[in-house]
Length: 54
Image 1: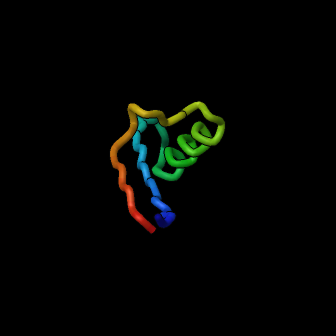
Image 2 (image 1 turned 60 degrees about the vertical axis):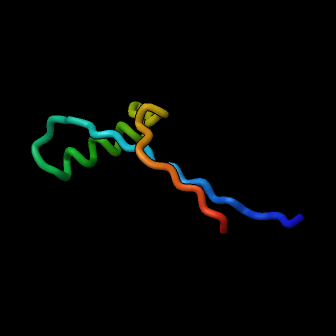
């Protein structure tokens, strides 16, 4: 019997609507909220899974 490594990749994705004066400001607001854990992705945000023997 041999040992194998299997890599699991999951992608979570969510669209956030936010009021801002520019794209940069919108990006920075969402980034700040995400980094401060005001936005937390969970299993309801799941969009993709891949398993691969490496």
